[in-house]
Amino acid sequence: QVQLVESGGGLVQPGGSLRLSCAASGIAFSFYAMDWYRQGPGKQREVVATITSGGRTYYVESVKGRFTISRDNAKNTVYLQMNSLKPEDTAVYYCYANRRDRYLEYWGQGTQVTVSS
Image (tube, rainbow, N blue to C red; front, side, top):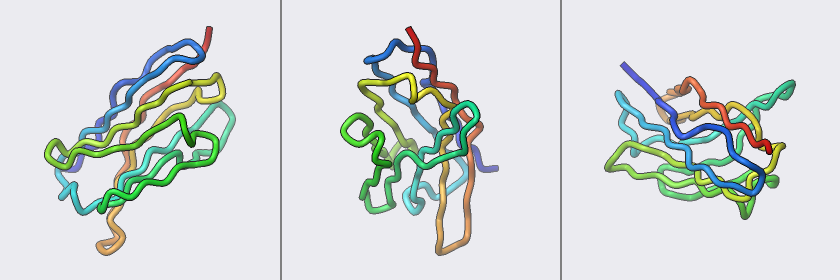
């Protein structure tokens, strides 16, 4: 059974930091590209950051310089370090695993991040 379990969300003041984790099980983790998506109130879900199986990273423009995605294949875990958080970063953050060569994709259940004073 495949599971992606996010953790690390919460309430933080503007300018603060959080680190999200997504622990994967039931998949050959190292072969998957891993994404973090988010969906804010009244907004469409958007990709925030991607890390390929080879370790290349990509970010949406709005988080460049503030967020860092990383992975630990030994722990089957992907992280999202979020610094200098802004109220507009408030959203449910989702972990997404995909392996295009096998047409496989999986979603986590999401973790709430609220940035407010």
